[in-house]
Length: 202
Length: 297
Image (tube, rainbow over all chains, first blue to last red; front, side, top):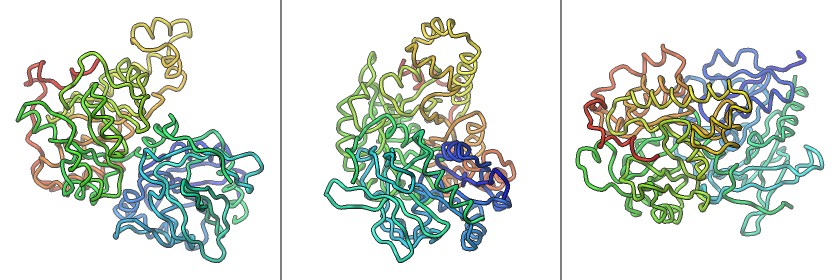
């Protein structure tokens, strides 16, 4: 693998630039992915934050869904934040009936689980895989993980207002996902962890 | 274990708008239209009493939508629901926050409630988007707490020319700021009628500190792509969809055009056979006192 791995960011909609910045800060070359040809040569993919129903539709409109599914199925490392997490789930709760996902992590994810925008919040999390320093996390109409299968590692949890513990960051093989948006903060350790996964799977 | 949660921060409010980038936000008056918008791939819907073209045609005072309609729209779709409040009408905004809409548009399309003051948007947990025709106006709205800016354009006309003017003006004024020496920014702030610190921030960033969408007169896929190429982060479409011959098809075409704004081949394909566009009015035919973009200051 070259010194700077080439990472694609799905650029159909959402906060593409912010992910590109965090990846570049971790030594990646970044390419925006809109059409199947853009996937050639990418060594990892990021599915950004945005509106998961819109991205799911555009993936099909663009003829990008199947080629990306094939690459992911053959082990391409992938990281999804928020909407990206929903796109990686094996089961979507409170989604639209026609909503599709890549099913790369064995988990059930509930959309907008924390509520509407007035319920969106910031909080610091413990995320040991990224070190001892608390991880600043921004949750925006965020999903959470309600069920995980065998082989899925929990990277972070948060307690809800009701006192329950919810899973908000996970990893399975070459795939990882967060409910929150590390790309909206200056802390680039989550993307750093993803680059470790990319290098491990190269 | 986790630390305390903070809601309604700048990062949470502005971050919400970041998630809408590259997307299309569509004006809807009821649940049925909201579903058509969601099916077409809208990133959010904007609830209002009447679309701008009808407000223009029917006249009268245009106000916040009936909460019953807003609740119906919220129940019908899973994408974010925004709603319009009148300029300065902070009680309409309180009502909309209580209804848990995801964003409030303090909009010149509705009849202003206050001809001097805008809403103090820092008082709210819900984020606000506001219209602007130039950089000074955008920065004044951000100073009042707006977490997202859109060009005003001239709503309800189907004439994109004012949206173009506003986007080019904002972009040009930012480019000019970047050329100024630090000591020249004091006068720039005075001329823009905006706070010095915010002017310095924009000069350094080279863009607004919040997301900049476009609105007002966008009626075709090519209009949406034009505005994206002029530097918009995303698109609001008002009357352009539900005043056209085939709303579902046009809505989907505008979504695809916005995502592929740099690709003329896709634009040509999605522009084909969309049926009647909204008839439209030339902005130059509208007497100045009836131009909505003149509202707000």
